[in-house]
Image 1 (tube, helix red, strand yellow):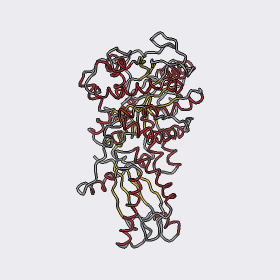
Image 2: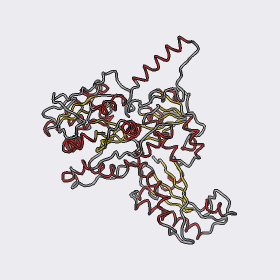
Image 3: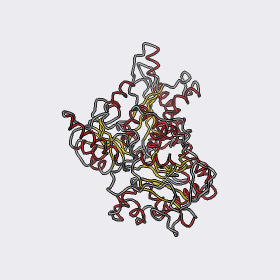
Length: 529
């Protein structure tokens, strides 16, 4: 549950209101397209009234630093963060806004100056100018900013994933809206250019809806300024669906005639936070960057036990009790070294490209070819961390058992897709392994992103009168697809297979084209309590 404040937008709205009053007859409403503002602030949770800390062009140590000279070496990092609980391990490692001598960073010889900037326009401008060495962004936001960095000829990298949203963000809907397909013709509210906005568009883009249907949903989204406004419009009956955050997800669970369609509790990848460094600074100071990461990893044990530093740094936490802040830590789950090594290499690049696709689909320009993720700074810490036991898979997906199998089958899928995989006739062997891989890799990517969902695979054959042999064959083919997913890193405990035989045709078997459509594998992603 992260935060953003549209400071520049507010000024624009006020100006437009005054102009409208002068010319008469004009009005301003929160509707599609009205709030379109390039480079809006970064995160999600509503900001407190605390002043933003703006970096100077010189580090607070007083030493001159020229970021345009990659040969300059310094143990000082000027870093911007917005007000979000997920940055807490960095704050704890620093001991506050500026490095305390007895803090983890202080003892490591680092000097980290933290600047609280809730506006992504301001922080990205400062990063490009060289007033900042690093800034905290979600991968969603980094994708949005990618073209801006490229156009400014500033190379940036993300060598550290700090945390992921863990149930703090999601989509709430009226009870009759139960899957992505039912979003068609619904009134859908989103806080524009936010991470919540990207959630809705991502699901639409991944669905089996036609391009025309996808465009219809995306072009008719109703834009709001904040997730709070979006949720309030939903509960007042103005819209059917809202992309928002906590506590509105919990409120939807406790309110009749509505429900949580999706929350990030069922995905550790859709909203991930990381630290973006200027690449010239990182290359000139590789030990500084690795130490920075190391210190944050060391501070993880303070995450839900020590709260004074975050109160000092971020105004929104100043009046909160220890128990209140501890409760917020649940919404952002910290990553460790093992998670970073895997995520930076595998899932993060896929999510970045997906998010670039999200912004492109709403008319923004991005650089999806940017090489954002750099694992070398994490690899420098291998001797210290790789001997540790790898963590359990970060997923909230239930294991499939005989006891819950039927309940899972009876659960409606949030997202469904079909794929045609050609098998050798009368066998469960792929006819062409390369062709099968090309068809199934998209589903592997979705499965890794939605790692808290159950995957139901249904095999089908082209038959008007299903025999038991055909039913068995169709299930064996579903099992073959399951094995492919497992080999590519999907937990077998998440996957349920069914053989339909020819009982679920989607076309006639009287034509070769119809038979091809019926000879398919259906893949369903299900959210199961």
